[in-house]
Length: 294
Image 1 (cartoon, helix red, strand yellow):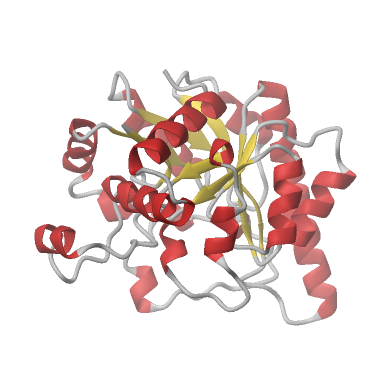
Image 2 (cartoon, rainbow, N blue to C red):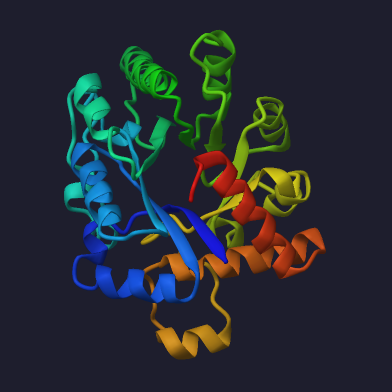
């Protein structure tokens, strides 16, 4: 059994065959948590999960990119835009009570994905400071919600780990006690800080890529198996598929799916020098423990 702890089957990329994809996953003993990025996709994640007695769960939250700060205009290229519809609806502020109401569903197992994202940012110093402040306040509000509801948090952090770590240190009163750093792309010092907080570390298909200044192999080697979660972030970050899988999926496959989480597990097992079965067993246990999955 495997658990994809970060999927987006609530996104438009799966509108035509969502039911078939989930059926295939459950048949192959792959569970999933669909992650909200705004109110609409959070609501959609819950509605999807409600259709299944077990194996499909939801997380709700407002992604930092989905916050309309009024300070940047995000332009997606044609390739990216092919997947983006309701998942990139923007919200001017975080409606605490509205999201709290959503969280009443027994299918909601976490708050997220929430955090910081500096990939798209203003160019002037004054606007950049205000931009970062708005994202920080959004994160703190959602941390308060998680604390009030006693739910774990799924962190999204892109090009902002030092700032996120500082916020967590400066606001210990609402710092999440239970969390995962989704799709970790950072250095060893940052990894060690998150592990000191006793957080889980999520790895996905990005570990197959080469990114300047990032050593994914070292990050995986230095993360205890007891703190690893596996994820796809589908429909994005499709891992490098072996020839056999490509033959089934087609050589031009670009859309990631929860079923591909097994290739993340295989890659981690190889780097760790342990069996695939060990990684499958431990990451499943980790996911069940953090999110209280039954």
